[in-house]
Image (cartoon, rainbow, N blue to C red; front, side, top):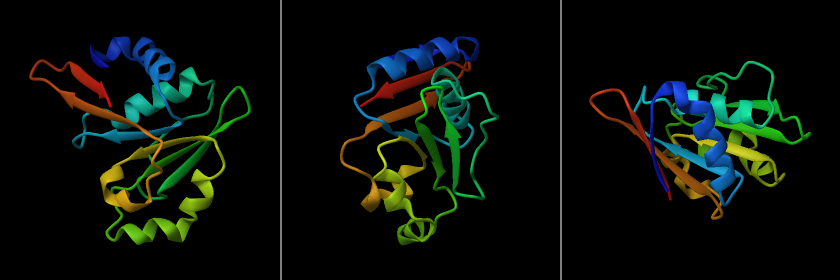
Length: 135
């Protein structure tokens, strides 16, 4: 599935992604500043999160509660230098719980990503539209 959108459409795009996803493990690929965290914020809102969603750049993981009582674990692996570092925060325990897992910069922890996942590639064109490809 490919979707082109502008930021004012992000909530409806997020709803479409949730409907189309084949997994609760979502991997977000894209350059710095392309809107990965913005999309994750909107996805969390669609899942009923009412608290403030922010990038866990320094903490590596943030946890949110959905309106259905499930949790969202939002990882940002940007600062990971050796992929084994992700194990220091208990990554394996997080992914075994069956909750939503959102991972920015998953290429940094490639060896530890669950096989059942949904890849979301985000890019931006010269006029500021975002392009999302779900693979």
